[in-house]
Image (tube, rainbow, N blue to C red; front, side):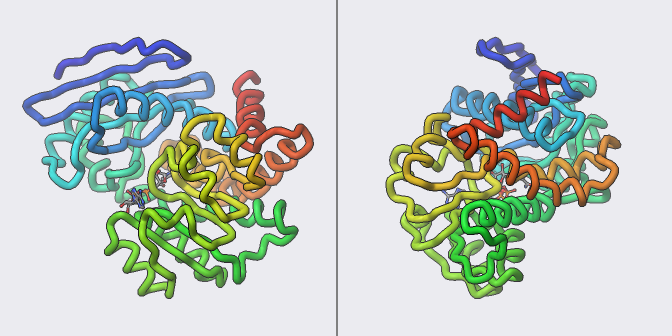
Amino acid sequence: MEIRELHPGGEHERVVEAIDEAAGYHGIVAIHSTKLGPAVGGTRVWPYKSFDEALTDALRLSRGMTYKAALAGLPFGGGKSVIIAESRKMDRESVFRAHGRFINHFNGQYITGEDVGTTPADMELVRQETPYAAGLAHKSGDPSPFTAHGVFRAMQAAAFHRWKSANLTGRAVAIQGCGSVGYQLARELHKAAARLMVTDIDSARAARVAKELGAKQIQPDKIFDADAEILAPCALGGILNDKTIPRLRVGLICGAANNQLGEDRHAEALEARGILYVPDYVANAGGIINGAREMGRAPVDSNAAIEAIYDTVLQILALAAAQHIAPARAADRLAEARLRK
Ligand code: NAD
């Protein structure tokens, strides 16, 4: 395995690339911060169009993990790994074992888990090569129901802030992405009697939710024009940008996807349109809070910590309103204050 330290500049502690040609493996581990504890963050498998695209993703995602852990009150720093591959076509055993060997190289400074394109079974393969993997099938397992519940609580809090009622009954919610988290979120919202619109580029996934929960299925490119009150981005990042923001008809955005804002300035663009945006890393912390238990560093009651996302969102939205800043800025300020402590 060829291992190369990268120096992209900026605030990351370490960024490392590994290639194992025999295993068909090409990955990057980005460690943003270990100030509060070992850097934690999942492994994303994606067919990136270029190495730079993969690197940018790893850098942004790992920074988000630092802020997420800090705001969730967890003794972790932020990291992330990406594997450049087509998830459905690769030899999972050789790729994830190579990934495990690469992670072992960091001696516990970085702990991984699942993310887009990976499953608990993949983490079992990583675990054959390194102890630094969580989200295992026989332990805390799939984090997505916990993530989805945290998003649901965040949505309730934001609804309370916006409409003075946390009750989501009858609210029209458009969900982008019906994968692990999107599906679980749809189930919770259905139980709360919300009206659902769903989409997925894998139309069979959206069709399943439509059939099971009576949701309306819409085309992927129509999600930004949906006649809904709430948008729940549960696919990939960068979807709130110059092209999509002017099209939005919702009053509230709250979802699981990491890095939903195309660029930082899009937080202000949403404010200017009167759209309340719940910062992604606040809403989607449920999975890591649950995973912390498996890593032996859980808050005393991880379920209570997931419920507390509700209060954190209220606190951030109140701070944003008081200081006349976007909620994304308020969340950053709160996280940075915790990092300084
Ligand atoms: P997943 O891979 O299971 O699901 C993602 C779904 O989005 C897939 O079904 C995919 O086909 C769909 N998709 C991709 N691009 C799309 C597009 N343009 N339009 C519509 N659908 C599209 O992933 P997941 O685990 O459900 O995670 C979803 C998001 O939440 C990711 O951004 C992930 O980083 C974030 N997240 C997940 C967790 C977790 O516990 N799994 C925790 C925190 C954050």
